[in-house]
Image (cartoon, rainbow, N blue to C red):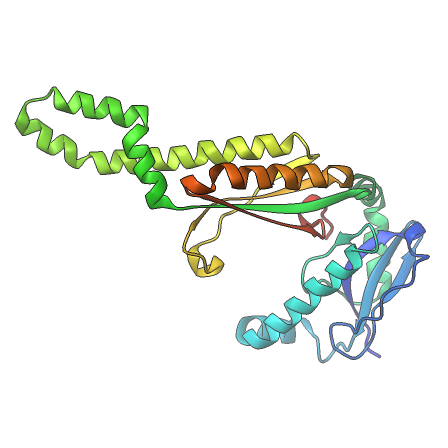
Length: 267
């Protein structure tokens, strides 16, 4: 058995009385297991140090997309399953330690921070909200009813005809700018309202259509840490927004609960 350890996550030792689900580890051979360290227990699997050296894994990540997709999916599914059973600080994909001693030393150095993180995560869940929009539909609304655009049209109409021609050519640029401003105002308002029922709300980078595979553009991407007791209200609020704003070009995609990657950190 190799001397490398693949780390999936850390859980409070007092929760480690529940048995782990039977899951094969990163190599598809050895099962995951618990490695207790006082108040913190690591969930790990063994890896052969020659087959999974740093150089080998780096080469696989950079040159073998099929391997990367398979292993990344394994990591995600394993952590997701563990999060359903334990309060977990999830680790990033391919977090490796040379041996048990090096892992225990790292846990010991971070035990105070880990204790605080476990307390934060206990009884709370991470949820994700993506907001999509039909740019053309919303652009039409901005063009027709935005006060800045209306004022600009009135200003142009009072100019000599020769100048009107050149000023009108600038209108598309102004409309596009007001479109982006309107989208940000709308999404920020939704975000702030949802933060009122959550402990924390964080804004993430939006994805392009090549990633989402949707015809609508992603206008907002955010994550929330919710008390379990507030999840139903959170989902109800999102459902209401969907009903209120779908006809004018907005769509909402909520998902969760997820392992709390965005509200815990350990390296």
